[in-house]
Length: 313
Image (cartoon, rainbow, N blue to C red; front, top):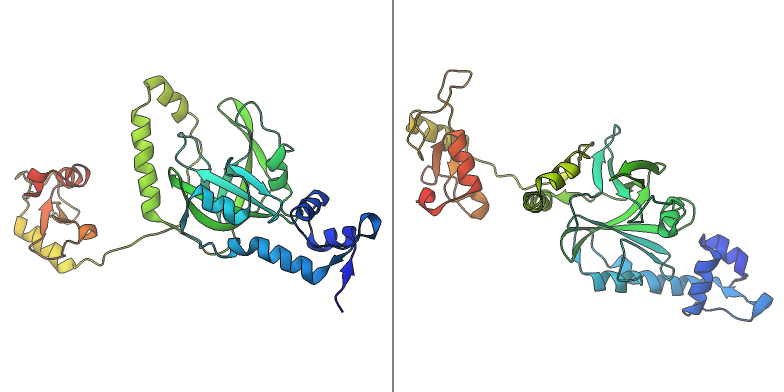
């Protein structure tokens, strides 16, 4: 026989707030009776909640999702950097690297943990930890609300990191003359961000920085006080060392691009040149003596920064 339970015991068993349970009722959570005689069938309740959260379970960590897809899966708003959903008992937070030079920062702590220092809610004045979703996130270790993270490296494209949890107590710091709350978060699971996403982000930030006036640039640069760190996945090519050595010997100390001698010698007294693939390996080039040249450091950097057709030819 199915077990029936009252409002308060159900709330405690599900570890949810009374507000969340009432909103679930309003959305169709099954129950019988009214007022003080209201009862809930545990199996029916669990089935209803599972159905509400089933789209979350289908999300793939590392995949890019659009705003409407996220809203549909979590049954949350389509706006805001912190979105509370009572129907799925979740808090969806967004770390958007496309908006401004200031952003949340990842660090690797003394224990080797990758931690996101996530900036709280409130864009004007000092932030209040009891304000809306700051409060939800602050009590997420005890209120039963699961927290999920998305990161945006391109406008409108949100990479799903999966579930995160608060690993240390929130703290305050001063940013741009106001007090903000920082929430140290850790990803639940083994997701590691692809390195190319971070490189693309850096390039976009460099373009944005170039557009600032000297005063704007100084005001933003002076607030930098913490080096960001995070683990990444990257694709590495296993280059043939014999090809590289042959190319440098063939060059005989002369840069293949500018025709000038190497600018200095290495510790063994050999002219310092670097091997470069004319057609980059990342673009399908071959690691052969027919696609490799020896360049001085300046010309090598020039090829990677400008990649001019006349230099390639």
